[in-house]
Every structure is written in structure tokens, then in C-alpha cells.
Image (cartoon, rainbow, N blue to C red; front, side):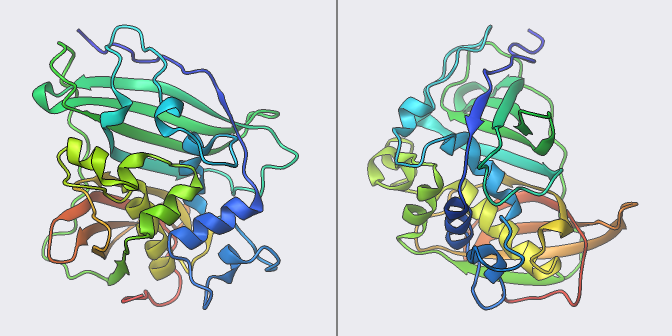
Length: 311
């Protein structure tokens, strides 16, 4: 079996957002009024959407209210592969390329998510990995604002005879080099309850029962909360909190985060700079005193001013 499902295209999904949604997102991932009011106040002369906001739109779509997560995630059948249970799925890895600055609202435009399957990989007893590519597109002119690749891991849903899949590229921290910056994020019991209001209403992050059934012992924080809050901290530490200074961002979800955990991110500059002036940085995020929760971290940023640590 070569690659069942590869190239399968999902029906396009319309997506919308308001300025209020941009403000909520920035608040939920840790933007601060002291030096990031441009993400938090709609009348700021430089008001902008935090650039990773597009990652939430496949969950939110056009809704402005709470939705039934399980019903919304009910899979469109992919030819040649089993239909998986969306109640037992976690994120594997996400990568995003920022191609155009997001407007602060979709009002007056028609945006949609165009998504296709790039691979479905059978990992045996552990589960199945579904790789996809999603583009946020202005339907009227075809402009692509963000291109997102991601993998979903369907826990315990493998062993159906599919291909194991290729190894993914690794981006470890530079060996023997002290981090150029470190920052911490303290989560609370309410962290996921706030973040979910962006549109990701998976009960796994709000109540203990689904997490107990999946072997996590209770509720866990959205992997994309850790992913987005780390992106926020890195842009603040290295890129002056300016969306124009980040070109690419990615990380692998390595272990769960529990409400109340403290997250510690370490950043390493590599000195590798592309023709447009964006430097590759590597990073890891770990639970203080525990495991790495985001590995394989890599971003391309324009480094501005002194690199900030201990945000």
C-alpha cells in the first residue's frame, strides 16, 4: 500500500472572524497590555491580529457561539482508509508559513480553508497519523494568507494495514550551546477554559472524563494553546512583537500539559539567515520539572533589538 488518501481534497470551508475574535485570541495566549497593546486594543493605531490566529479557524469556521466539537469534527470519509473516532484524537505536529498579513476582521471579504490529505500513516497499536495541508485563502482573488501543515494522531486506532510513513525532519537545539533566551508561562485551572472560547471546544480540555478514557488522568490543556503561547513568547523575545518579523513557525506536540503547569521555553539562535533577513531559531518548551511538551521547534524570524529573556 503506497499512500492511501494522498491528495484527497476536503470540501472548502468558509471562515469568518471579527475584531473581537482577534482580541480574545491575543488575550488567551498571553499578550500583555504593557507592551503589546497593538494586539489587545482595536483602536490602537497599529492594531494587528497575532499572526498564528489562522490556526484556530478550521475549528471556529463561521460560528460565533459554542459548538458541538464532536459533531463538527465528524470526519469526511477519506477513500481507502478507515473512518477514525474523533473523540480519541490529539495533535501531532503543526507548521505554519505566514504569506500575507491577516486583516483584523474578515468583514467584507470571503475567506475559506482549503484542505487536502498528504498522508495517512499506520503506527500499529499506538494509532494512526493523518497529515494534512490547509491554506487560508481569499476566495475572491485566490490569495493565500497562511499555509498550515499538520498531523492528527488517532490514539489506539492503528493496525489497519496502512503504510508506516516516512521519518519527519528533526530540528534539535544546537549541541552544547546555552539558550539565547528563556521565558516562562504559568498556566491555571482556567487557561484552557479561556482558550477554548476561540473556537476549539474539545471536551478533553474542559472536563476530566475524556482525558481519563484516553489515559491522561483528566483534562489537559490544548496542545495548540502551548503552541500559540510559545509563538507569542518567541515573537516577543526575538521579533519585537511585530507580525512582520515572523515568516515560519513549527513545533511537535511531545507530551500533554495539565492545568496549573508552568511552561518553560528555551530559544537558540542558529546564525543561519535567509536572503530576506530571517534567521532560523530553534526552541523547546517543557513543563517545569517535567517533560518536554513541544519539541522539534523551529521558526524563521527577523531578530530586532536585544533578545529579551525571562518575559
